[in-house]
Image: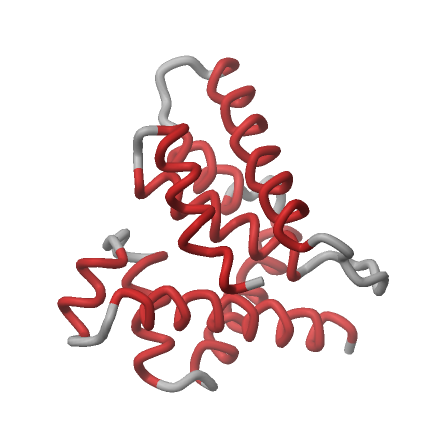
Length: 159
């Protein structure tokens, strides 16, 4: 499925007119597809990935329509990190610690690519220049970091 990454970013960039938002949607689509609970293999991974990404765009636009002036990125980050009770705060803190442990297990370039993208908001090109690696390798590192973190979080949640 990784070989569809660039193609899907280009497709969404053409639709949305914003490469950064397109890359974020594709990342979220990969996380959603890789994190699905079903053990049934996906028969048409390309179509499934495209449909997932388009659904995320539609959901984002619906949320945006409800809160007119805020960009999709703000809504995404607010929802992901919103906390509603002390119990959630504890859970959120524990999840952050687990995420930090999972990231610490990654090779440095993989971890740095992921953090520069998700925390600093750098584009793939900026990360490639900063780390002196190819843009394709940056993309691969970010996807691998997401896969690894998702798998470890699932594993730790099960215990």
